[in-house]
Picture 1 (tube, helix red, strand yellow):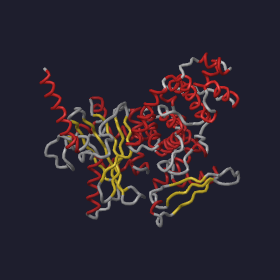
Picture 2 (cartoon, rainbow, N blue to C red):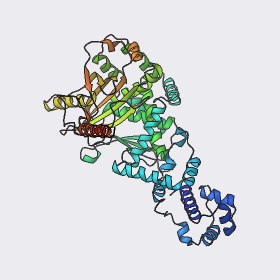
Picture 3 (cartoon, rainbow, N blue to C red):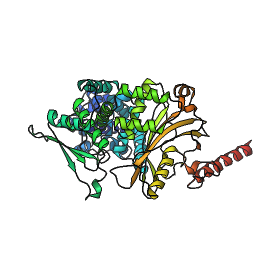
Length: 499
């Protein structure tokens, strides 16, 4: 455990023991021989006393020495201790949210019982929803992206410098590989996951130098990965180098398997952002989006050409679009989603989402509910699955667009989605989607939205909460909606009776 966390726990324990006896700092100072200001710094987690001073406190409070130095807190404060010992508070980028670690400790010291109850609530929620530390870090990262509209000028500038140094030419797979080997002393090797089912979904992992100056860092890449996946892996690796991210501050294996700290999650994102920015240069994409938005009609073939031009995955292209559309087109009410489905189950999971300006629909819901099958992402995954069952193997991503109108909110979104097999992960399909609110601002900037034959769907969040009658896509009855309507009806009847 980190030393500062031990100080915080000792300080909370001392404050608890003192307040239980209803003593002031001045009174404990008189009994222990330690100054009131020093005791205050101990209670705030700023100082940890030496053994003889702990002994003096032990005698004054009439508490055994071993109990004083134990990390165990009382029942009321135990949840707070659990939260501190996870190390999550140390990893949080508090400055991003305008917070300060010392102020957070002061808050815990001044109201330990209330904060303890709050910590217990957070821990119970995380257990009920099976939230692991890694997912908690990803949630913080998502907030960090959303606050910054998923655009980071320092990373854009570094990517621009790299491109200028390399004559602004398209960054090819072989060029990156040669650069890492010749200038940065890398070994790049393939691994074959055919004989090990557990490794098939792993695209790459990193083996550090282990402190040996003559040793080479080794990047292992799955032989079954697509060319554009390999290209991104190498571009991200260049990001770790250009951003001077040390080996101990970056992930060595996929983050979903292990995310030791938020800093490592953030550094991986920064390197990935740089990698995307050199593969899809900012000004080039601005020009392409201007062309696309000025077209009178939507064109799947135009979008296919964009994928071919940049030689990246649909996910990278759509994520890059979120950054450029907010900054250079003033389209800020947008979202990005990634759905996955296992075959032949056709169970849909929302595995990634990013919402800029505010929480948009669709978004993640309770895991036991069924996402609306009229959503663009779920609709394309269903179509892709049916094609696969019919023996149609798509060589290109399945592209679709639609207007989605939510009756409850009255908001209409336009979305672009791309579905494909999730190589090299076996028996899995993936669909990525970018969507934005259709308002006057957007209508004036994107001409093809006026096209009359684009598909329109009335949608909802989940089947369980949907009141759309005779829905041909419904999977289960609207039982949750009926429950809520019944409760609402009962409330109204009780209100009428009371009046």
